[in-house]
Image 1 (cartoon, rainbow, N blue to C red):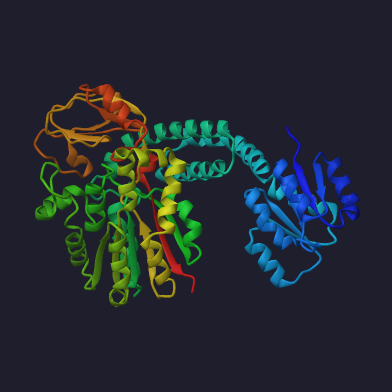
Image 2 (spheres, one colour):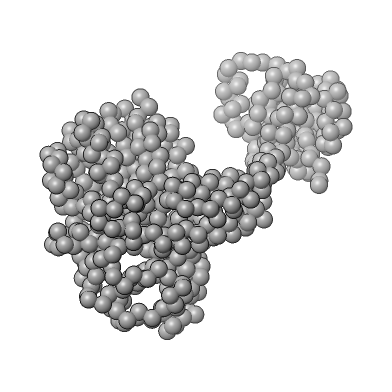
Length: 518
């Protein structure tokens, strides 16, 4: 391992021999300069891992030298060392992006701590995180094998997301690969669990089912309304639990998290089925039977989510909730600004519903646009893009506006998405649905062990387009490809984000309740 190189700039460098000898004994290489000009010369000639800079020097002061240092080596951490504790000097130094601040006289251990914090931090984090995950790996493997309930699978998924985010902070690629394999193993087990249990979940009047997306209003929104709370329901289309975890620190600046849950969406994990079910409080089959004019079959032209507000009205009417509400869909920034401009009026209504489609559009763009493919090449990059969007979005603006209002905010989604990798062949007639993660059609030809097949859609709460309709759902990271032009479509869709099938990423969705901190 190469020695860490330190540059120490101080006009009284001779008085620092004890500290320098201490660092050299610890294995560090220390170069010194007793004025700004000599320091800049050294920086032009060599690379350093960290710089200690005296604030009070004749000629160029530390604060005057700092921007010149940053011009030459902008990413090298600079630790300001000063005799003064004056607040204005501290403010100016921190504003100039110093990495640390030490007050003279500094003892060797203070210096060592600063080096470890600013130079060794990534290595120490990597070693510690890797060691902890290695210790957890065997325990997780046993839990995956033993999982028998929805709640247990939810806990497994939470743990896997936790380690995914922790290992993302490190540079240890081997552990990333091991975690990815463990996640695939978990998804295989989860898919078998869903295949074995989903039909029983969807039996009429069944109590043997997890909290599902079509119960969100009944179980979470209506109790708040009955308690005379003003409620903002924010539905972020295609929003995964791991994406929520990267947004959590940003939202926690303004809101206290009252409740974090993982609930199950419906199959197919697509907007047409899951989001309509949420807003109707019914399964897709029940919607098509009770309100056929509000349900669009997959064969029909036009959008499949055009009647969401009407479905909410039927839901409120069925539960005798005579309350005013607003309903808005946000597809771009101007739509979002309009929601904010109408906020004063809408806050007079007890229930406000806002649907944000950006994450869903990002997922589809990831398939269709080469630039987005490169920007969101993996789950980590996909999360990063979501965070960047949120930081500059009208949704964050809306939440800032709501932070001083007497409201409860509920954030959820209709389904998640997964990066697919393994093509599996299917043959169907011309009117077979085009989704890559599920198919509905007649005379479908497939390998039974590769899919979750449902020959009687009504058994899982789904309408059928004709008497012999069958639904098949892909699992894990599989996706459907027709034999015609197989290689072309396999290469085009491999490693894109898709939804509609069975995986933890698609089915285990966040449901979050907040109250403003103020």
